[in-house]
Length: 177
Image (cartoon, rainbow, N blue to C red; front, side):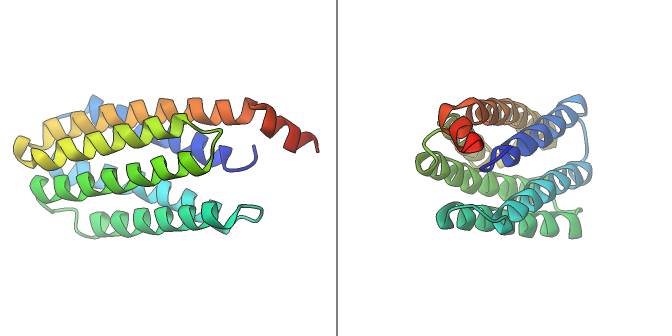
């Protein structure tokens, strides 16, 4: 898989796994949710950083991957180093992360014309982030359910976008030539 398709596919799988875990254990404590979220964002950030250092990426795409990767790793480290933060503080961190990540996904979809489904991931991410920020007091169980549902939807759409990108005539022509 070329041109960042593997990044989308790996992010999609990680999001689905995280989402299923969050939905299967909705009564998790804020500590367990923080660790799950931190692990997911760390994987997502590391994948973005690896893609950013990969050769053959246009400068804007490389910069986007590096920015998203650094943001993800930074948020993951804060979350994993201070796992005892309250559900309220965790909701704020997750909401901000979801909005920023969503805006960057929308921007990437505009720059990466063949990945229109990535815009859907971005919109879902922004909406989930806004929902969490407007109601951070609803508790860890509801936050886990919202985040789990968002992660599964985003993961499925990322996998679909990766599949679409991989199957596009432009990608096939580049791989052949």
